Image (cartoon, rainbow, N blue to C red; front, side, top):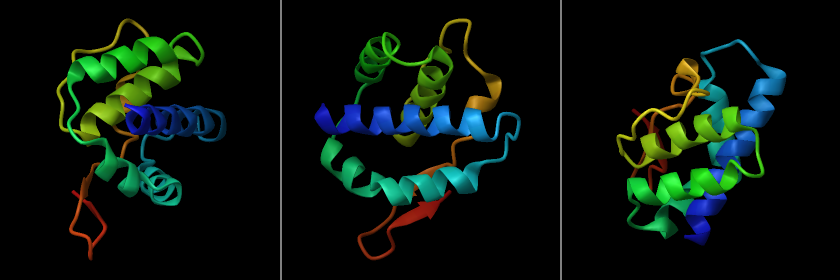
Length: 117
């Protein structure tokens, strides 16, 4: 759970920074991919293992207490997308463009690293 929480917090940080720097550009997939590579998402994803929708919801609820709900909901969408989980929409603060800001990625083989889907 520690690695999943670290990944979730990195996503919250990404969306906070993105909102302050690029508030209205929905096409930020390249930025997200670059951020993921710089922050070591590949290592985190390999160490996480199995994740359920309840795990992501639980972390999201905890992080709502310390972070901006807009960023937490956007991070929740991205983390669930990384694991291929279909979560119900977050409460009223869900931004429609939040999913568009996440670059769809899959974990490639050890030699190929990240691959955009």
